[in-house]
Amino acid sequence: MPTMYEIYAQYAPEYDALVTHEDYQGQLAQTLHRLYDVTNKDVIEFGVGTGRVTAMLVEKARHITCCDRSPHMLAYAQQKLQAYADKLTFVQRDNLELNRVERQVDCLIEGWSFGHTVLDHPETMDDVIDRLVAGCMALVRPGGAVILIETMGTMVEDPAPPLAALAHFYARLRDQHGFAEHVIRTDYAFADEEEAAQIMGFFFGEEMREQILTTRQAIIKEYTGVWIKHITD
Image (cartoon, rainbow, N blue to C red; front, top):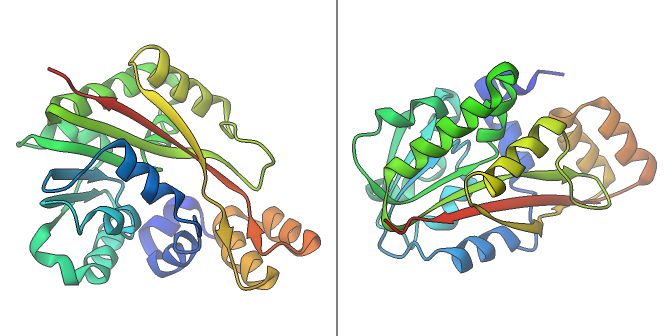
């Protein structure tokens, strides 16, 4: 099985097959639009991947700058969203390069991406979290919002950060930086357990693949956290 970063670098179609089966009840899009109206707003998105969150926002937004450190993912997203080419700009950029963005926007959003950056720097975790948040805040105009989307558990009964480091990250967002937390169900739905095992196993590993086949699940529980901070000045 390829590593997570190998998937991001080389397996966009397989990754897209995973995320397009997630949130079959549309809870994430509803939550995002309820928390912040992007109508005619300028948006920048980090960790754009294959463009799943982008697609939720692009019809209403004025313009979205789509950032990801993987050119492979960006190329796939650009092709997938070509019908909206006049409203999208694609930029190869790492999350820690927020300070290279030269113009402010109304909304900054990231999905399942900052958590990886935090995990990649265990010795300087708090500094990285604070740097990410400061970079986000500097990019958003007064009246806008910063929205962070991260996992709260896959194939679990109750929502919880799957790693202690992520629990620390989420707590720091709430307690040190004043983000409001919203937890929602974003379950995966597949045609049958064989499809679920194949697609989920490719990304999450053999243990999950075997568990899905053993329990014969075609609906896989998923919890997602959405953290938002409105910028007032």
